[in-house]
Length: 383
Image (cartoon, rainbow, N blue to C red; front, side):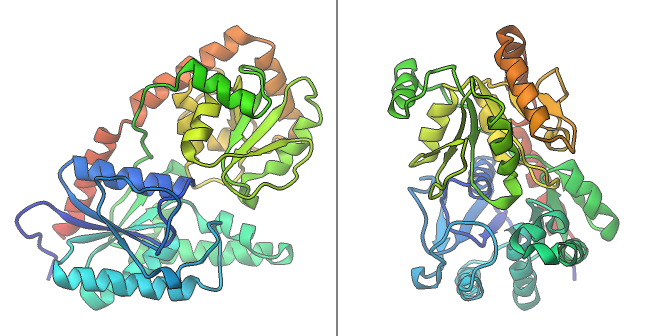
């Protein structure tokens, strides 16, 4: 029989196989999406591992797996304790489902979708695969270098199977939608992440944050995010060697490590990184792998920062209209040239920054994105 939706708000379980909250893109996106869906009238609960960094959104009901089963590291990728954590999380969700049934599972990323498909077989809850990335291009980042080709093939096979078996796919990028669409007859839609705009931090707060880290407001370029291999920070290291007059700063929540000649700053939380971004002159995103949507791009746009990124990561941006996009295979010299050119041309940089902010306001408004997500979930629940 096709699934039927009970009267009342749609009951949604957002299934996340990671710690929450945490100052990382996937966690930020999952939390903001759940809050936006609740504002749109859906009854959403978020299920996650047993600990997080900081306070969760006050309006978001949270169900945690036991803390003893949770990996201690916040970094992405395989970990020995993951299978135990996933089993504990599945049991937590099943108990909640028996108390008050869910209409649909919104499974964030591949690992959560594998878990959701197992739960669907046991409890009959439809599963929507939220494709944060494509494992066919990212899995090699977590495998030994000699296994790169094998990891690509395995990752692509997992991508295909998840798309084929899920009741629908929500892809964050058009690359992911195009890659997964041929493998299923069920809905595959692209809905990007959103951002709730807030007032900018005060100029005094920005100056103090820069002073604390020995930076001059408007005198540095910024990368804000994690240090995982798929971010391709090696390109920035080599570019920094060609930019002695423009410091390249890495702001990260992760334990810092030497990435000379980059300056690596550890920031305690997302708000500190946001304040620092309002003091930067430029922002950079060197990531190569397609299929995902770097949340940092939205943070850069919010601060009206001119962005330098690879063309395949532009995600709706157009070169020299609302960002500076280097060629897909661009090396450190191209990044250095782009940063040097924009730093020497404040008028052009300001134009790109303002256009990027306008793009954010026009394409990443959470109420619109939540309405599209709501429509997809109702389509799944109607069979």
